[in-house]
Length: 256
Length: 256
DNA sequence: CGTTCTATTGAGCAGAGTCAACACATGTGG
DNA sequence: CCACATGTGTTGACTCTGCTCAATAGAACG
Image 1: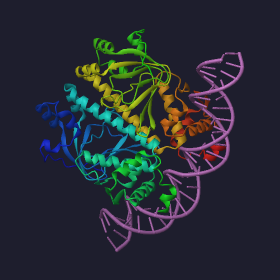
Image 2 (image 1 turned 90 degrees about the vertical axis):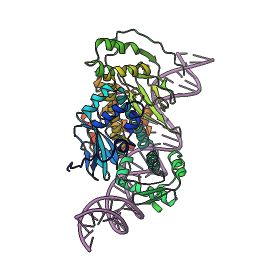
Image 3 (image 1 turned 180 degrees about the horizontal axis):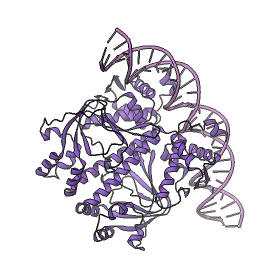
Image 4 (image 1 turned 90 degrees about the horizontal axis):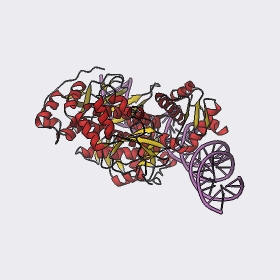
C-alpha cells in the first residue's frame, strides 16, 4: 500500500482547524496569536488518504501526531494469533495517536474508512514546542485523560453489556459525536462496515445485523445501507440502561 | 467511612520512593537533586488506608495524584443502573488517577483491597511544578500513554477472549507485575476477591472459580485461598493464545 | 455483467450465566 | 471458647444468549 498523498494547503488556518480538538483546547485562550501561528507552521495540513489506506501500520515508528480533518479512521491492535481488535473510530477533530510517547514499538494500525484527510504534527518539533509552552502538554494530558475515560467505558460495555445494549450504546455514541461536530444527531452515515462495528463491540457480524433488524422492526431506527436514522432516541437510550428491556430474546431475534 | 489516616514520615525519600514509577521515570536523569527534593517536598508521603476504605468516592473532586506505596487498590466506574465495572488494580509504584485532568466530575471510585499506603501529590502544586519542568509533564504523558495501551488490551480481552483465556491472561499479567516489582513471579497473593476478578474480567464468579479449579486439575496452578502458585507458566501462556486449547468444554468443567 | 465484497437470514449448538445448595472461613458477642 | 451470623468460595443443574456454519441476497467495482 503506497503513501502517495497530495499535500494541499488550500484553506486558511482558521477555516481548516475549525473543529480541531487540539485547537479548541489549547489555542483558544492560552496561546498567543504568534504562538498559534508557530504551532500552525510546524503542522502539515490536510494530507489526503483513501479508503483502506493505512495511516499507520503496526510496527511503524511514530513520527507524527495526527488530527483528523475530514473523513474517518479506525484503529486496531493485533494479537500473536493474528486476531485483531478495533480499539476506536476517529472523526473530524480527533487526535489519533494519543498513546504516542512509547515511540519505539507501537503495535497498532490505523486505516481510513473512507476518503479522509489529516493534519499532522511532527513529534520532534511538537515536543520542542511543548517544552516552551506548558499549555500544549496540558492540552494533551487532557485529551489523553479523556481517552482513558473513553476506554474505561468501552471495557464496561464489552464486559457487562448484552449485545443489544452494546449496539444501542454504540448508536447513541455515534449520534452524540455527530451532534458535537454540528451535524445531525438523528440522521447520519456509519462509515465503517458491519464487521468493524461487530469487531469493535466484541460481537459476531450476524448479531449486529440481527439487532439492527430488531430495532428497525420496533421503529426505533431506520437503516438503509450505512445511512442511519434514529426515530426514537429515548427508546434507544433506555435500552442501554434498562436490564429488563434486554428482552429481545434469542427466539424473538430468530423468528423475525 | 472515615478518612482517619495517620500521616507518617518515617523513612527517607530514597527508601520510600524506591519502586515508584513517577520517580523511576522522571527523577532518574531528568530532574536535578534540588528539583527532586522540591518534588518530594510537595508530596505527602505514606498515608495509610485500611481494607475496604475508599481512597476516592465517585463524584469526589480530584485534589491529589496518588501513588501506591504499599498494598493494593481497585478502581471502578459505575453506570446509572448501579452496575459497576472494575477498571483496574493498582500496586506498589502505580499512579492511580492518571485521568486526573477532568477535575470537575470524575465518576470512578478507588478502594483499598488490603491495608495499604499511598503518597499523594497536591494537584495544584503539581501543575505549578509541571509548568516549570516540562520533564514532569512528559513523565505523565508517558504514564498515561501506557495506561491507554493497557486499557486497549483490556478491551481486547473482554471483547475477544474466552473465559479461560481471560483468566490465564489475568494470572500471567499478575505474575509479570509481581516480577517487575522484584517479587516472585510464581508464588504470590491475589489481594482481590474472586468477585473482583470476575467483575474485572467480565465473567461470573462461578466461572472464575471453575476455571481456577480446571487449571488446578491440570496442575498448571495451585490455589490455596488467595495464595497462587504457578506450576506451569508456559502452559498458562499458551492458553492465552491458542484457540484450540480453548477446549475445557462446559461439560469438562462441570464434570470435575 | 460477472466477480467479489458485504449484509441478511436461518438452524443448531455450546460457552458461560443464573439459580440454588452447600462448604468453608472469619468474626462477634455471650 | 463456643455458637451463631456473615462473608466468601465451590459445585451442580439448568437455561439462554449469542456464536458458528451455511445459504442466499444485495451492492459495488471493474
